[in-house]
Length: 391
Ligand SMILES: Cc1cc2nc3c(=O)[nH]c(=O)nc-3n(C[C@H](O)[C@H](O)[C@H](O)COP(=O)(O)OP(=O)(O)OC[C@H]3O[C@@H](n4cnc5c(N)ncnc54)[C@H](O)[C@@H]3O)c2cc1C
Image (cartoon, rainbow, N blue to C red; front, side):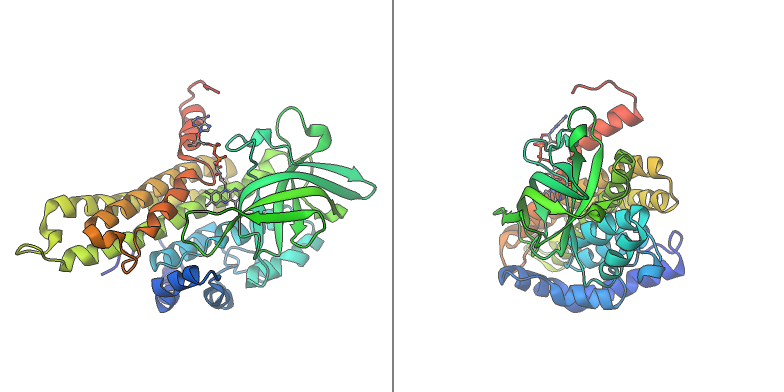
C-alpha cells in the first residue's frame, strides 16, 4: 500500500485522474531507472519526453500556446506524483513553473510565441538564475547589471547554484539595470540563450545524487537584443514574485514527493522485517515516528494546495505567505520522512541496494533552496506576526 494522499473531497475528478495517471507513468519508470541515470551521469530524458507527450510538463501553461490551461495546482500534482515514485523531475520547478509563468504573465506576444510552445511540449527547457555568490539569501544585494548599448542590452555578473544550465536552451537571469544598482532591488528578467557569447557556465561538484547539475555562471558583457528583457524594467518585485511563488509551491511538491517515496519504502520494510517474533513495524518506537511523518506530509500537502489555490486564483499577496509556509512545512516533513526511513531500515538504510541514504542530502535541498528555512521564518516573523527585523 503506498502513500497516495489522494483526496476525493478536495480534488476534482480531473485532478484525481491527473494524479493517478502521472503516478502510473512514474511507476513504469521507477526508482531503478532514476538511479541508473544518476549512476551513468545522464539525464532522465526518456521520462521527460514521455511526460511531455502526455501534456504533463506544460499542464500549467496557457492552452493557446500549447499548454494544458491548468495552474500551479496541476503542475505541483505532476511533480509530487513523479517524486512519490522516486522519479522527481527537478526542472519542473524552474522551466514551466518559474520561466513559463513569468513569460506567460509578463512576456510580449512575440516572447510568448517564441518560448511557450517549447516549454509546454518539453522540447525547450529554461533554467532560472537569481542566486549570487556575494548576495546569497539577500537578493536585494544582487549586482548582475544590465546596461543599454544602442538597442541592445549588455549583461554582466555572476550567479551560483543554478540548476540544469547544461540542458537548458536558455536561462532566465535576474539582474538589475545599472542605474538601479544602488538602493532597493528593482529586478529585471532577461532570457539568455545558452550559446550566447560571453555566457559561461561551470559545474559545481555537489554531494547530490541527482541527474540535474548545479552551475556557476559568468556573464561578461553578454550582448542581448532588446526583446531579451521579459516584462517591464520598472515593474519591480511584483513581476519576480509571480515566478518565485510557483517556485516555492513546486519545491514543496518536490519535498513532498520525496517524503512519500521514503515513507513508502520504510513502511514496506517495517511490515516485513522480523528480528524478534513480530515485524519491526509492530514496535511503537518504529511505528509512531512513521505515523508522525504521515501526518506531517498530509498537513504539508494541505498547505501546498492552499498556496496553489491562492496563486491560481490570482491572489499573489496571499499566495506569497502560503507558498512560504507550504515550502517550509513540506521541506521539514520531507527531510524528517527521509531521516526516519533511513533509520527504519537499520544498516540497509545506508546500502546502495535500498538507495535511501542518497536521499538524505537531496531532502536537505528543500530546507535551503529556493529560500532557506530561516528566511521563511523571518518572513513569517515580519510579515505575518509583525515582529521587528534583526537585519
Ligand atoms: C541543489 C540546489 C539547487 C539550486 N538551484 C538554484 C537555481 O536553479 N537557481 C537559483 O537562482 N538558485 C538556486 N539555488 C540556490 C539557493 O536558492 C540558495 O542556496 C539559497 O537561496 C541560500 O543561499 P546561500 O546558499 O547563499 O546561503 P546563505 O544566504 O549564505 O545562508 C547561509 C545560512 O545562513 C542563514 N541566514 C542567512 N541570512 C539569515 C538571516 N537574516 N536570518 C537567519 N538566518 C540567515 C540561512 O538560512 C542559511 O542557513 C540552489 C541551491 C541548491 C542547494
